[in-house]
Length: 284
Image 1 (spheres, helix red, strand yellow):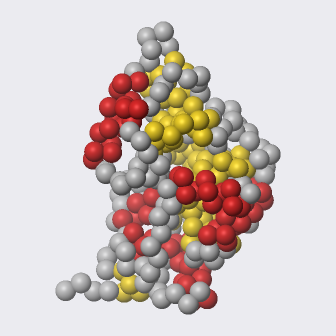
Image 2 (cartoon, one colour):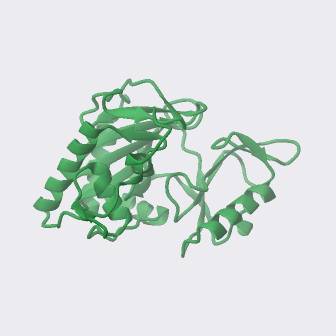
Image 3 (cartoon, one colour):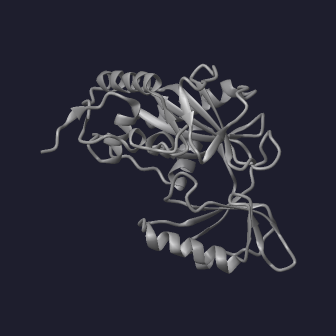
């Protein structure tokens, strides 16, 4: 017989939400995120085109540009097209490969056939020039009860990607707080120069949405902050392959989520198993 227990840690609450044992029924695709950003006065990358099927995508446009499926998260299906060679191949900086357009289309088709998602469409977005050179840094802010609790910076210009972690006050988090997995490495822990603006933007968006927890993915050119997407179950801490929260931080963030639920009159969900991060291997 399955034994239920109350969620305690942050990853427990994520697991309850993922397994639908949590009261929230949340899903925001990339078009929803753009509408929410507009309502909050936050910029997003310019939309150049929207296609219903990958076979419809027109690659005959100036580079760089970005292809994004609207219904997937965690960069699933994202292609950063930054150049084209004499053979007609496109350079996908996300995966650092040269591929023909028809190969990219085939891979996108295989992806949506393997992971069907009703209403999935394909955005072509203008390239966002970050404050850093190359692929702009990806900032992921976890907002609990309207206040930022955790910030992750992902630098995809390195192989593997480099990660840096901060608390809601932009203090760096170290090896006693977070373990980095085999699919990433620990990067420079200098806080982003406009970190206060990043935090304030994430909190404004999460407060507008009015949910107990929200992951807010942002980009910045050093002056402007742009919304990338909204995440209800961020894959990094949930699956634990890229990084894993250590017990003390996992528990502290879980206590904040619990207090937020109580303040909002929401129940504390039960979990019937351990979240994947607590079972993961290959994390150092």
